[in-house]
Image 1 (cartoon, rainbow, N blue to C red):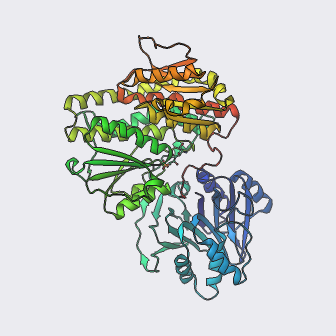
Image 2: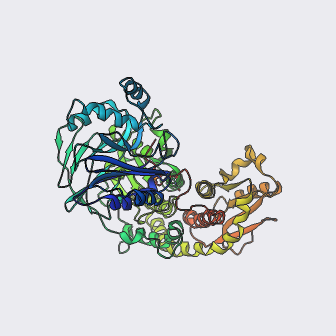
Image 3: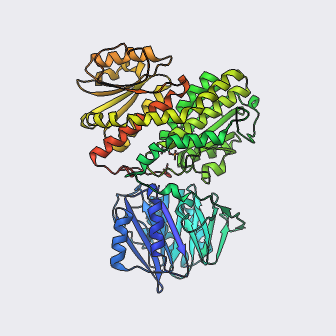
Amino acid sequence: MCGIVGITSNKSVTSMIINSLRKLEYRGYDSSGIATLYNGSINEVKCEGRVDTLEKNLNKTKLSGNVGIGHVRWATHGIPSTLNAHPHSSENVSVVHNGIIENSTILKKILVKKGHVFKSQTDTEVITHLITEYLKKNDLKNSIIKILQDLKGSFALGIIFKDQPDVIVGARRGSPLAVGYGPKENYLGSDSYALKSMTNKVSYLNDGEFCIIKKDNIDFFDEKGKKVNKKILELSSNENNYDKGEYKHFMAKEIDEQPITIKNCINEYIDKINNDINIFNFPWKSDDISSIVLIGCGTAYHSCLMAKYWFEQLTSLDVSVDIASEFRYRKNRFKKDALYVFVSQSGETADTYGALDLCNKNNMKTCSVVNVVESSIARDSKFVLPIHCGPEIGVASTKAFIGQMLVLYLLCIKIAKSRKDISKDIFSEKIKSLKSLSGLIKESLKTENEIQSICNSFIEAKGSMFLGRGYSFPIALEGALKLKELAYVHAEGYPAGEMKHGPLALIEDGMPVVVLAPRDKYYKKTISNMQEVIARGAKVLLITNKSKDEVYSENIWQTIEVENTSEDLFPFLVTVPLQKLAYYSALKKGYDIDKPRNLAKSVTVE
Ligand code: AGP
């Protein structure tokens, strides 16, 4: 999960590479580096840390050159350090890499026997030595074909060569790679986002392909070296969303944007005149589908889990949910009448892509719910449902989670209606409730002050728990994940009814416990479970909805009330205070909110 950029031009490329690397930092930010070709030799500058540090180092060395590659790293093999930072260069070539070379140990042994000396602990360095070796007896193209035959694993590569003054080679297996077309210069990037400030004309490499990029020409080849033609695609431009505006952090901006993103998404999908949901060109009849399998990772998995509750409640489909990294290596019983739905904000998550690829290879009905419509998952699924929430830059997913839930809910009620699992009247009621969702989320944002005053308890405690039943359970998991990834405190999401089967032992005097109990069909049961934790000394933050009926319980530490809505839509409203809780907890601890430790926005390794 690293970021790659390459530029070949007739002018100096260093500052352009630095600008692109900044955009790629969402993919990794523990070390960074750049290599250029200048006066017939490869020069590199690398450092542990972010692109800002790299830029300071570059200013000292005055690195120049008209062809170059850059990299931001999220460590897999070897600690984050200057030595392990990419590019990895020999006298003849320099390589940046995203992914994992699974047979690097075996290859390294062979190369060491041939006299190659390794400097880093990375798997990437074998690629550098391998090409250097092949170039002794082969031309550039054949050397690339040969290394691609040798390498096992999934990867995207960018390579420059001492003897090829304006050439960058890109190669893809498993990890995505894009090329961009500019005026008298061309580009390589791990995604189009990295290239957006330079061009809106891009092509994507398919699995197994490689390309030879020169400043005035790009050739694409399959793994055997046969030329392939590529479509040039035009990217949509929405640059304004890449700006923090008046906000201190993208995350804060993205949380506050949710009423707008919900509105946009609803406008895209709801046909207000006919009171229907527009899902055009859906390739399958609803009668051809008897089950649905929802697959994702992390936050996207939580939105899948949420959707399971809706699909089970509102349709007669069999529903299952899977974590992509588990699904792809299990012995699956593929079902012809199943719809496989892949949920991913970035559309580049390696495990989710792997699961999609497996389903495609088994000729299944595949559909994706994505934010980035140019992504690999979107491109390779048979049907795409975009969430229309604009770029999400903060590593912690917020508005995309709400957007994923919304699109999955829309799909659910659309299928329910077409299968006649719900009546037209119920469908219309649900559409009506959806139309007020944006305004209700706006109200949930007002819980901010209450949240700010209580987050100290969460950051000072040894740990905390997030409890919910039914529709609130996936949200409890998501609330705990947000607090963990941003404030680095232990937090656990649990089904409220499961506490008595063991985890109650964790409850100590003063332990903060969030209980999600909107007044839905689970309300009374959840309140009973809440009393069980209060009886054992927990400090309960109850999140419920406004009601004239008092909550029947004593000793609740804090209560936050969201607006009233239909049972189905409470999950959206209770999510917002949990996002704020994580945000303000991290803020109080002074952490880097948009780039939390050990994370990356797009997880492109398994
Ligand atoms: C969310 O806050 C995460 N950082 C993470 O769990 C994320 O949702 C997961 O990696 C999946 O990403 P995707 O939606 O881009 O596939």
